[in-house]
Image (cartoon, rainbow, N blue to C red; front, side):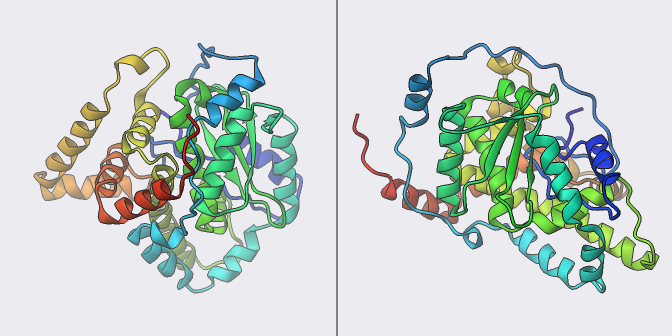
Length: 346
């Protein structure tokens, strides 16, 4: 099983021990295998990259061969309706402001920031410039300040975002994720992560992560906490649909996003050449058809299972982004990006 891309619970607990309050910074990812809030996942072995250039001039050329668009797309133009509705419902829950204040602690955020920035490689114009150019372009397209990108040695294909209050946000990507995906697919993951920043998902993602490691809120009535947990998970799943759209806006090609989702669901560098996006989309349609014809009991059991997940099912996400890529909404966004891109010098 592939891990839903959230901050490592062991890291979370270690950082929590350094402060008197319990919180976390916002974490998320494009990982397609959904997980319940308490699920653990097995690491995926890292594989050596097959292509690596030591020339910074070559990586800069690769990163800039397609002219970047100059238009930026406001999040209101691509926010998924379910995300919008569930955010509104989440804010309407009694005592939600008190719950938020109870779990968000600047000291823990700083501890988490130090943990990742001291054990990872910061991407810059001098260090891994190809990936720096990806961050620059996605941030410009989504109209947000450019976050910091760190590459961290880890065998589990993963990426997440730390929204540190008062500081530039951080995106951490694992080396195994870089190995698994093509450059365009990795750019889609970066776009997904920055979609959370563009839509200001940070606070809710923080709370979802805290609940995921079993933190208790002393003094909070059970019925309020239960209602909050259920709505937060519902929001978390809908927010992923929004950020998949942000990924598509950054790469403009739905097959790239679907391919990244497919690989994260069940791919590896060894299998990559034989994977088929069309077959994965057919699988998604077959799942939907079988669910529609299932008995009421099976539908109830399926809903009960998915209601405990932080991410939508991989096939559901692939089908959703494929459908949105054919919409008039996306067509208008894509045309605006294409028309705003400077003419290539080639």
